[in-house]
Image (cartoon, rainbow over all chains, first blue to last red; front, top):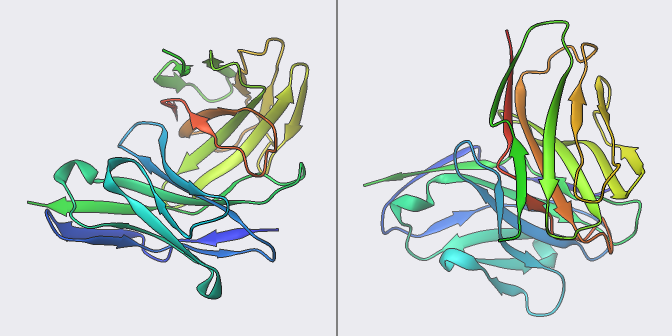
Length: 114
Length: 115
């Protein structure tokens, strides 16, 4: 079965600074990887996803993520953070096959200081 | 606009009562899911359904029940057997080509509090 780890529970960055949120997965074959964002009291919104092909994936709101098979990672990045990016971010991993379902990480809460 | 709606947004329950959370989608998705979210624990799957009149237990199904009588609707009942029901509940849907790789689309959630 697949698993996903988000090592950072809480991260604080200044507005305008760059951001990197870490995600490590465990799965023997090629994983399907997702990043979702959740504003307080709201549902989850898909930022981006990786299935195959180019390992650098562009998403909405200026986010990107890079799949690194050798490091089993799928870190989320943004060059310049805006105050509205403050939210909780979830990484998820899936695997092909009807017996599998998405597995979500425990989330990283991002705080943005002005 | 297509999307997923959940109601109510806030729900209060007395101990020993059953409550039902509503989830409706107009995305024409075949698969629907219920997750429970607790602080620091991420999302845990309660139940999921790939087609009408069929559903499967997820990782934490004890104390919960569901039905799928219509493609658009997937209500969740939190029964009195659920020992710690206070949580944020999220409903999601997907096209169901492959549950392990489908993109899931989420509703806004229902916060349940047991008094």
